[in-house]
Length: 320
Length: 295
Image 1 (cartoon, rainbow over the protein chains, first blue to last red):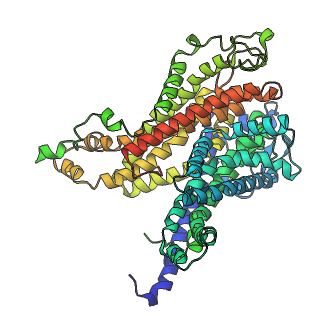
Image 2: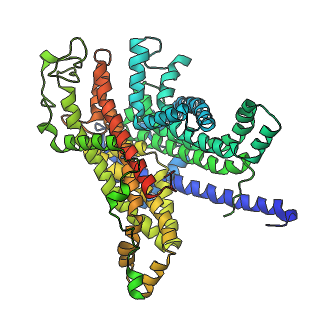
Image 3: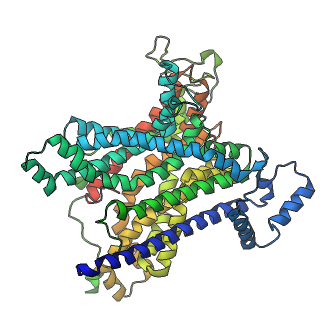
């Protein structure tokens, strides 16, 4: 136990040190991801095949060869690639005749929007389910929640999407099967994508609620006669939500990965579908920047999760 | 003294099966998984029809319980009159083989790397853990897309991506186990007794992490099956004429308005297989190590 007088200053130091270390780790991961993606493209032999259409004139091929330093050793090629990438130059999409980065950035809002909607859907289910299964532990709703969770983890997200289309677009004809434009359009993709994390989130809320409901202040509240509903949904949930809130970034990152398939099912104009289409039209610059951008988002949201712990719950300390 | 040190920790004097039985053993899941294994092993031999046999006269037959269903086609037929049940049986092979690769290769590679990382610590550990971070910073499907874009899509791509993606799980968890195991007396005594690093790894540490590896591997089966199905669904995995559940769903999507069964049945096959594998995995985890319910 430290003397309380020196505590805040020291805490600040520990936090700064931890922040710097985590941010550095994040940067290393991003650079590492770019190296991995870069080297995969070099493993295939001649990257020119990937970067230019087959009918490209020899003069252009020679020009790109010089520009990218393809006659240089491979580490130099990476430095050239990284230098250009830092300036936002990832080459041109030869399908769309536009800078690859611009193309992918245009689609980014749609993907982020879908991921957020999916996250909202999963929380909307997970919180009541988690709370109720903790309050009525061992009851029917607890068992139902568990069964639901196991099912959710055994169903591929694209299949959930197809089933939703089958039921709500084809048989009942109440929702549009694909595309964008209205709130109704986002409903099915968001459910398909948000289905999977419901299970894990329910479990997190449930076990946090079990801990909190057993704590002194809740018992105290009961003793002074506070209503059970207020105790559970206001005082207990507020604390039990901390683990869920802090881990939301991880799920957001997972949604980005899942979006690659779900966007394809619903023709959702996001990064995932763009990259999948680019794979088929052999438009490698687009694949490269799309995947790298997803990785950067992925690392950033995981990083924010780690950094947010202390803000959301000041009891958590960073020194080990 | 030395003799004591090298003796493996004694198990309770009961057989493994006795220890496992009577703890809510998931019999139904085991039977289902056994059926899937049989389907994967014998494929065409147990299927009622040729999985690729075209029969346009029998296209779009509904399952047997529907008014127009026929006993010859239990689960109905697709747009080309191919029997869906036969294709599901044939597709089991791809799912299970890719899961097997993930378990054997990702488990062996990841497990060994995790052991090295945990045992030696220091710089080696730091480098390996950064590599794990880097690997985990690229979403698995995104990595699959890059590999498919460069090398083309086929079964090998699927297997490579699965191994490249899943070794990190084993590495991280095994490392954590080794960190505590290496402080045990028997490891120190083995060193004193002059055992080489390889002996310590494979005779003293490996038996102690086997349970963890087994549980991880079982819990991964479902994930790998879903991953393979997703890749094949996107058209970046298994290619026709090979059959896979993901590929069936990808085909069926084109005539979703005509045949609900073609989109439902392969998905149910994926679902019950994953469900069974996950339940067996949960049960193994609770049996071997009730403390680690979050694994």
